[in-house]
Length: 195
Image 1 (cartoon, rainbow, N blue to C red):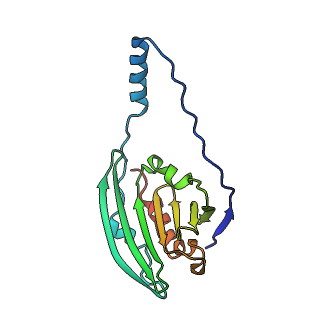
Image 2 (image 1 turned 45 degrees about the vertical axis):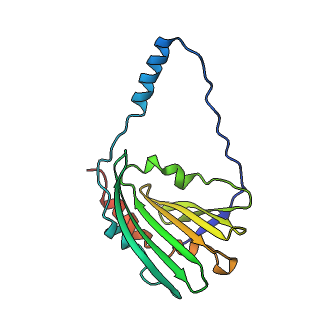
Image 3 (image 1 turned 135 degrees about the vertical axis):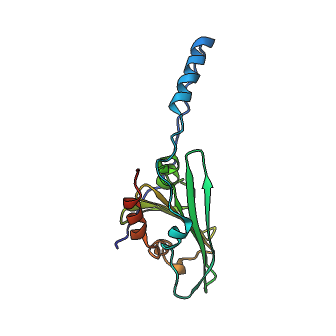
């Protein structure tokens, strides 16, 4: 597996506010009806895999570290069901890493911004990540001794990694991503497609 990363310039994200026009009541009512039609919720055509299945992609042994609090869960959103698997890894250096993998099934589009659009902050170094069929970004804040990774696989699975008490001695936080079995997630995505 190859991991390629390249530092990107920190750019502020600007969002334009839509212009507000005063309209007579009848056309305002018509516009509201049109907006409701556009935001109609379409539920998933297939279900996510179980949390137990997601746990199989998590590391079971990490050299010099303890794996704590493995957990799984299932929740329902407006778009459909999601399943999740989480573990916490405690390194002997005192660094703690939380790893979460979520199966968004067919509604990844509803959360894609979380994994595709990094929020730029002063003092935070952002790096793009690509690994297999996945891509995302890594954020490192040396001053707060923290790092995080947001990574998506096959436009279906979201991986969230948080590193606490981070120091440069730990190395790149992206090494944690390499502990996961991303190929397993890719295989699941190929098998569990819309029926």
